[in-house]
Length: 80
Image 1 (cartoon, one colour):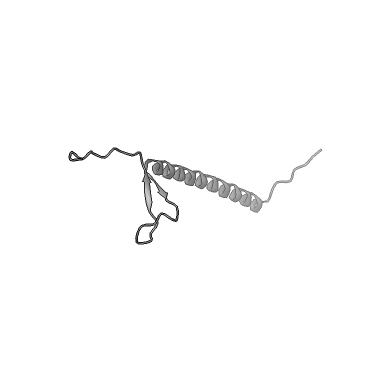
Image 2 (cartoon, rainbow, N blue to C red):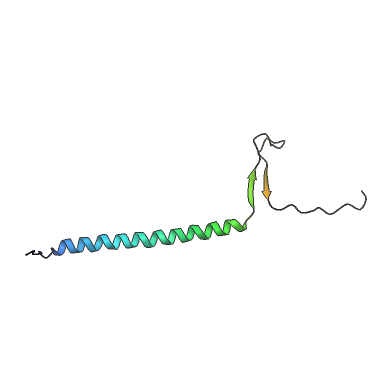
C-alpha cells in the first residue's frame, strides 16, 4: 500500500511560518479595507468640490472651485 514519510521538523516550521504570514496578510488587508471604507463614508458627508473648466479663472489666473451643495435662497433685499 501507500506509505507516508513523516515530514522533517524544518519543513513543518516553514509550512507553519507560511500559513502565519498568509493569515497576517489577510488580517492586515481586512483592516486596511475597513479603514478605506470608513474614510469613504466620512468623505460622503463632506461637500464635494467641483473644478470649473480651465477658462473659469479669477483675475489672479487661479482656477475657481465651487462647492457642490444644494443652492439656498438668498434673503431678499427689502429695498429692491
